[in-house]
Length: 129
Image (cartoon, rainbow, N blue to C red; front, top):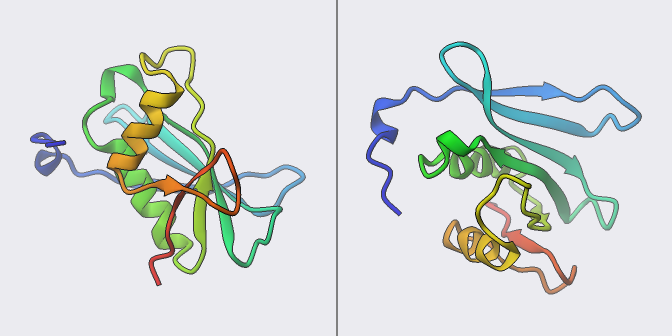
C-alpha cells in the first residue's frame, strides 16, 4: 500500500499510562491539529507468558483517516516499546469498519503480522530484537 500523504504529516504518537486496576497498560494515540484523537492502540502485558508476549488491544483509526498509514505507525511504536516480545492481538472489526474479520486479518498480514502458533486465533508481530 502506498501512503502519498504520509511524508507531509508530522505525526506525534502520544503515550499515556492507563490508570485502573492494571498498571501495565499504555495507550498510544495520534491526534489531529485540533487535538482530537484520530487513531489509538493499547499495549498490555500478556497474561500468558508475559516474558514472551505483549497484547495489542483496540487498534482503531477513525473512518475518515483510514488508509493513511496511522495503524502502521501505531504498530511500529508498540513494537519499538516491546522489542523483545512477540506482539499478539485478536483482530475484531469495530461497528464502523467496512471490513470483516478475514479482511482485517489480510490487512494485518500486509503490515507484517502472521498467525500465532502458541495462541490460536491471534495474529502476531515477531520481536524486533
